[in-house]
Length: 326
Ligand code: EAX
Image (cartoon, rainbow, N blue to C red; front, side, top):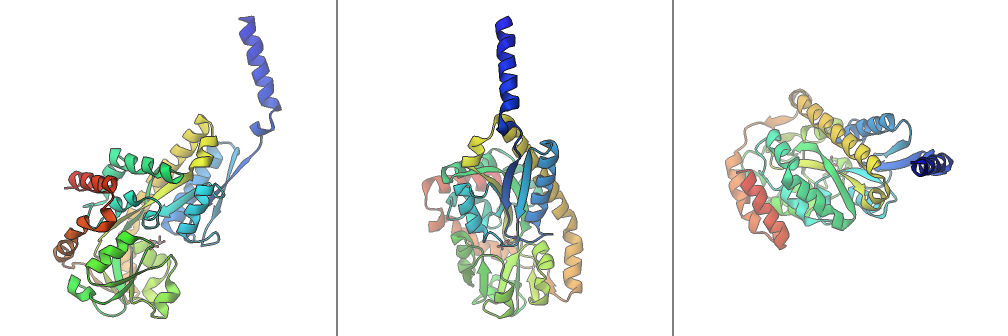
């Protein structure tokens, strides 16, 4: 007994003497978007939860608005642990781990609650786990939301109307394949893309409603079609190198704070969609709210056989996703 007490005392003194016990851990979190954006809402909520719950042991520095590069650049820095965390749109994960293509598959999720069920369930967990082989610790999913097409050439109601449109897509072979299959002329480009749209280098783009509002795309894009062709999650990730250096308690703190921030942001995003649509119309966008979705869906069904899903484990995951969302 005396032995144990002595040992406990030594450990306790050792703990007090250790500089690490009192040092503030400064953590870099990267998002490409600017304040007010979906990614930033997750980041800010996470920061406040972690700083409060760790009683100042962690300080989270949010690097936003492209100051540390685009989403691909941020992911590379997270792999190297020069940045510890990121809230990154699903699309640019494409080249890091092609399994992420399966959650960006067109017309996969019927609605947000189905997306939540799958992404917060075992299939989502499998996707997050898979990222570890790319040096990324997947924590959870927050959301960009359902993506809609905008363009400056003509109203789009049917996939035939898309023919030849120059559409910017995310840095993703899968997103490129979708728009090629639909007959458009897609160009992958990192975010942001305001000047390319303004100068007419591209005719259109696709994104959730909040993007059209926060980035004022209504100023430079006339037509919008509520295609909701892809549900676009963010993956909230940490550097695996950093993660493995944390204690189990610290990991728990980070994981639960991120999950709470993600839930908070998803709810907030969804609550605002109706008001956003009204605002975009008020700003002059011509909106087709009832495009021929069946025709769009029929055009892309062959995509499951496409080479972007050729890797067997990716194809197996796509089959599981399609079965779970039928
Ligand atoms: O989150 O690149 C994209 O189209 C993303 O959706 C954008 O960063 C906004």
